[in-house]
Length: 238
Image (cartoon, rainbow, N blue to C red):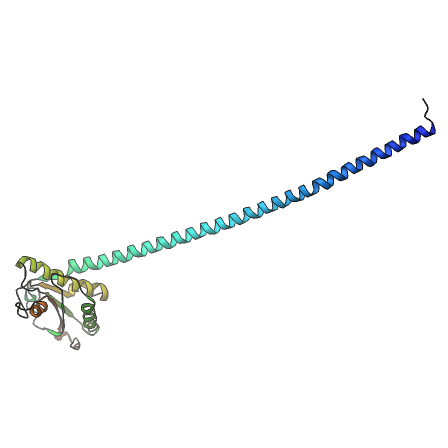
């Protein structure tokens, strides 16, 4: 069947309209989907950036936790070391000092030793703990030890007359121990240089019938003894 000229023109026009319609549809789809694609890309980029920030924060947090744990471990080790050092000093001072009822029992025959300095600290009732003033006096006393050679420290603890004899002997020993431990741990004095004597209430330095007298009897006396025959320089008195 042959188409006349008008029919051909009609068909051609229809094809042109159809083609134009198809292009319009594609353009419409492109116009509608482009913002969605762009928005999706933006979301993906933002999500990736958020993930990077989260990882960075997590890394910093983990580093902070590790650093804090390391500091805590170091502090714990330092505390343990300090506790051990203090314990060692206390053990050495407690175990290695010479103990006797009198100095004569441990240095008998050493007539060449003489006292060149001394100090006395007092304690509260039924107490065996050094106070701030006691430590200051011991610090002043210990400053002399650097100039002394071949010396001994006689440490004599006493009490007032209140209480049983055995309790006061024990209390006088604890007071003398407190002095020995302080000097040994702070100044590194070898334990064998100490001669510790606990006399309880046996030897009073003041009457026990007054409060002031009892206070003076609750004391520890420290004598610095030097062997003059070995040419040790004399230390100044207090």
